[in-house]
Length: 108
Image 1 (cartoon, rainbow, N blue to C red):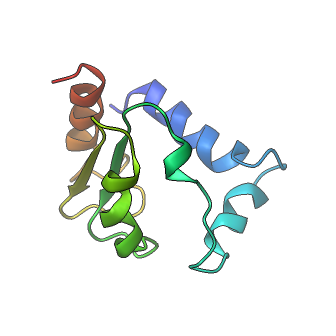
Image 2 (image 1 turned 180 degrees about the horizontal axis):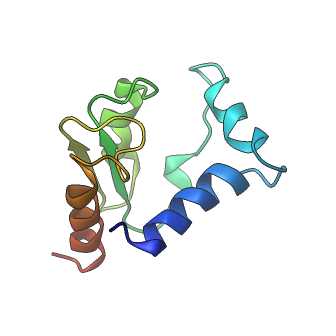
């Protein structure tokens, strides 16, 4: 069973990211130029977990791999093998996704 908090975080990010009514909020993110910065990582002030699947066709892997250098100390990048765009729901990945989020939040 997927943690309801994780589901809420996912839904909030997708549907309410830019304050516009759904579903256009996230679609604007998917259709921007690769040169457009959607989230300025250097403005984030707390350790952050960047987590994604290695089969996600929407990821800019150059940006993903550079993210730990732009985030505060204590931030991490976790790429889950076999995961695609919705790895938190995928049968082969959801448990590892949940475990990684809990591990990071617990400071382990």
